[in-house]
Amino acid sequence: MEKQRKDGEVEAVPVVIGGMVLDIQATSSIPPHPRTTCPGQIYYVQGGVARNIAECMTKLGAQPFMISALGFDMPGHFL
Image (cartoon, rainbow, N blue to C red):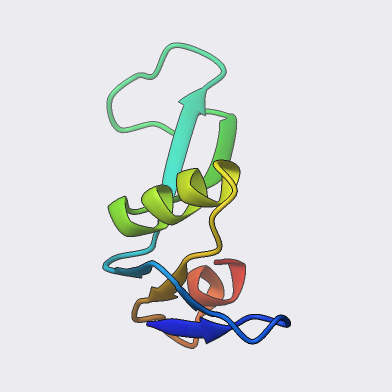
């Protein structure tokens, strides 16, 4: 993909195609027992190989263009 810069030069832009997912990490506050409930905490973490690569490229100073599929649900809105 190409992008026109302000000085008129054409610059190549990296394109990342792949998955974005919402990882769910749960930890129990007490030791779990079979067939019972237990308190704990749930963390939502942005993940997916392509999303992680695009994030790393951004941290290195690039401005990647990402193509991925998202749903119209809570994870899609979060991502």
